[in-house]
Length: 244
Image (cartoon, rainbow, N blue to C red):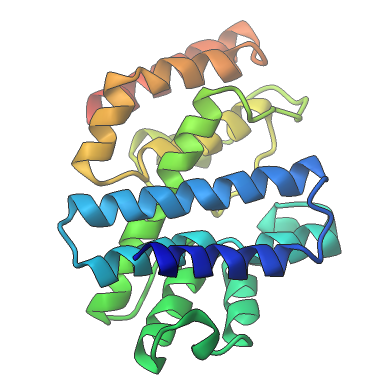
């Protein structure tokens, strides 16, 4: 088990070594990748999956965002709307490696590729194995973003006040808003906060509630908002809290 994890980590480090890993934007993606890998493993344990499935979940987690490194190199942004879909880019990168490099068979390699490709968007297929690991990595990814945001690592770099109505309506109804590009400070706050309701496993939601992560997220972003937008955001947070 440990041997496989070590090999996966070695492969990851070999890949990112060609990028400037001292760059703070890339460094946070390295940290995020390991966080998602560890959380994916934790979820697999909670679901009582086999040892093989647990280390496979770790593999999906550590590789889910490899496209982010090339995305930053090419576009100097992590905004998919202004560059390219990072899930697709991750798929393209890993697909060139081949299954033998990762100590898995062809069938597992296909599950890995599909899980990486659809970790940031709805999976339209019906492969149960893909569905299982897409759900695991999506939860791990969202939970990692919850913690990062609660810790104040996310900055709100926009300047415009107000809110896009569709973003707000989708948020309070717990509908996806990742497809929207934020136009205002409140838009960005809502989009980043929505990672909390993308967490669907009960034991992870309990962690969010027990650690008061929503309160911390509110404190992170409310300081950027005027009073009117702050009240709108507070109301949205309370609606989210009741629905979790």
